[in-house]
Image (cartoon, rainbow, N blue to C red; front, side):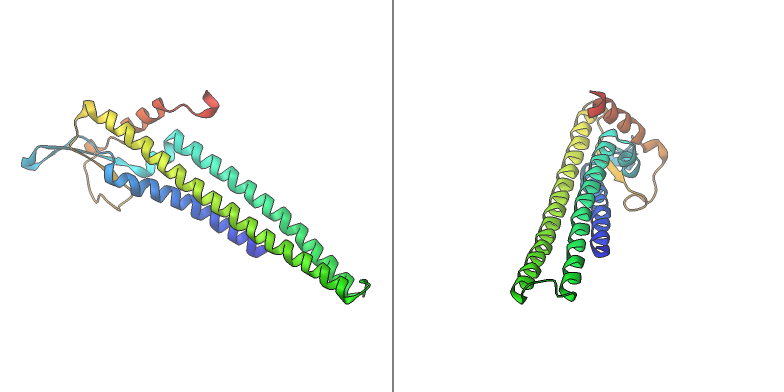
Length: 199
């Protein structure tokens, strides 16, 4: 049962890491930046801090909260079933040790039934974890599409040649804060998004 808890905790953590890394990674190609003239080329460049965007964009917050609830529900379901299975195993062991079964065949039947329950629980665990991962990937795509579609509209009036994403020190080692349009993008994204609770 402890093994199952570690597995579920690890899966939940992995799901959030994947969500955030995919959001950041996928927007790296088409992300946001601040106004700038880049040398003789005359390119207008800006950048967006992805970490801030992911932490404060209401759509991302809602997606994360929904995933946390689903992960908790999966964990609760699996823990309940694992607890019941453990109880049945202990009952079987006690009965077997006390020769409570009428025959060896009857004891074997009960053993096989419990083994089948254990296999079913493992299959359910795999299925639910797979569903969580699949939903997490779907959420990542929705988030990326939401940001990218906003940037396309936003840039029609701003005319940036390039909008760069910045995640910590991963992509952008230095840029003057005048080129940081994170706040403007975040305000625009949140103004456009209507959370389910506000509808």
